[in-house]
Length: 323
Ligand SMILES: Cc1cc2nc3c(=O)[nH]c(=O)nc-3n(C[C@H](O)[C@H](O)[C@H](O)COP(=O)(O)O)c2cc1C
Image 1 (tube, rainbow, N blue to C red):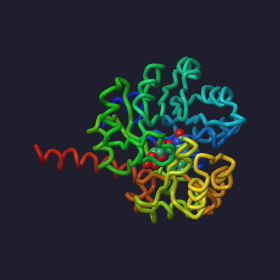
Image 2 (cartoon, helix red, strand yellow):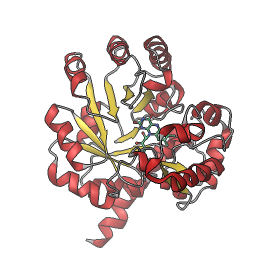
Image 3 (cartoon, rainbow, N blue to C red):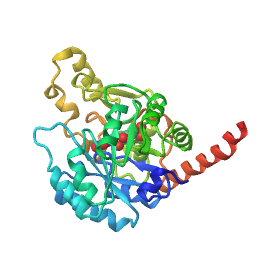
Image 4 (tube, helix red, strand yellow):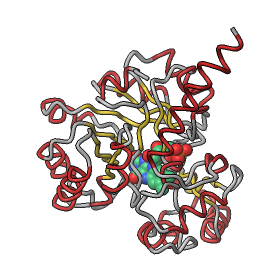
């Protein structure tokens, strides 16, 4: 299957693994790229330029295919060394960068000069248009159903994707709620050139996280996610658990007076304990509604092959049958 995204990124299948904190390590990125998609290392999980450079080297040792690095811009009192992180991406010969969280304009000249393709992840058509105007090569359009940060507009992909298609001239991938061949064909029908998946890739054999995380996703239904931090305008879709229920009670009790410090115990620094330690109730962790469509833990190659086979079967048999 050739699309503007496979051509732009030099990959076989139009399937991207989005950056995921403490999940997007070299093992998963390499597995996705080896299976013909685009794997992405999560830059901020490494934290420092030195550690990210090592992770890029590790990934390169596991795949000779293109892979990317995600750089997320977060509001922070002590921001990470962004110039240093971008420099090791360039020095490491990485060909794709996924940016998210804020406007990447100031970093585009150095990335463009190095020949790096930039995919900006956004949750609103106006942000996608901005990304196009400043020179991003593609966007990842993240609908309301997505795991992680869906923004504050709450527009689901059945509306957001065709709206993006109506406005954009650069290619875009559909992100949020994507799980299988049905998702891929639907995304293509709505105007996207491929899909970006987060939650689905966590429940794979190669995802370097504790088995409890994978089992929690398999056990969850589409009703089991919650939106937290809405009063802080930093909404995150997470899997429900006792820590999330505690957090939501604080949000109700404190209302407009809620401050980040009030919920620090439930959200700050919890990822290593959850993803590596398997302590599922240690805090709030991102998970998409798509958990309701995830019932197995295949290898990454099995997953990608099955998505492509199902998509082709739908296009050639089911859809052709309607003509
Ligand atoms: C556990 C987890 C951690 C994530 N961490 C990040 C991150 O650090 N940066 C980022 O840009 N997106 C992050 N995301 C969002 C994903 O890259 C992707 O956009 C999203 O998961 C797509 O929705 P889906 O989960 O329905 O596939 C994360 C998602 C999950 C599930």
